[in-house]
Length: 313
Image 1 (cartoon, rainbow, N blue to C red):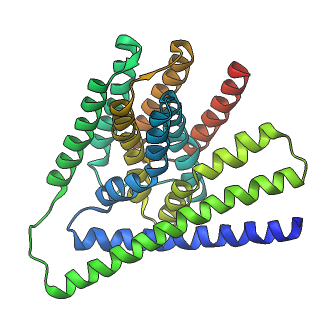
Image 2 (cartoon, one colour; image 1 turned 90 degrees about the horizontal axis):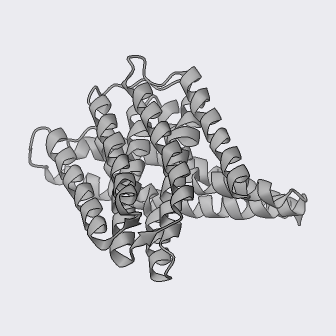
């Protein structure tokens, strides 16, 4: 049984890595067809796609009458995306060199947007339905601004290009499905392995499940960095934070207002603000994201996990 679980786990990992590699190539092709930068396409398409699990968690938690789950999920996901995920990707790629100079300005927008739900929550300790409308509107306005600002020559596509982009979008959807499905099985079999090897429950929760739910972003960003497409990796990380902080929380709050223990929220929120600010400063530096800075981000995530375990045990 242990051997079968191990084989299934390795097969799932293989599918995960292969689908992640193809996604990077397809994103580059789609970007060229749409006359948009790779950063923008990763920011919008890939980041939105990898935020779908958080969105469904938010909607389901709101419908079930426990929308605070979404708030914790978003804060935790944002911290993981900007520390562990991008940190591991940059470390494996020996740093990230950014080609698009506008990313620095977008990192400031990301930081400010991430502050909005925290400010709204501090104002009256609740994210109301009106707050939800505000957050969703911010998402729509920023996406429109991003596309409008980055759109290059508005040329008409020739018929062959239309067929080409349709095929690439179809392959993109298939690869994305394979990525999510394989990530699900990696988590499933990793947990089974941990149980069969008699590892403690806390290790299963903090390591296997936590890493597993971030696998789509982790694989995509690592493959992007190794392919020398640093803009794709940073675009996915920043886009995930913006999607989570606006669209996910906005839709959840519109279904059911979000309230939570203010002290628990505040400690996590302060950590998220600090991490987001530090990530922004690293991205805005001339050298991009170095190996040393990547290690610092990973250490911050480990510190966060240890703090959360100690604070909430």
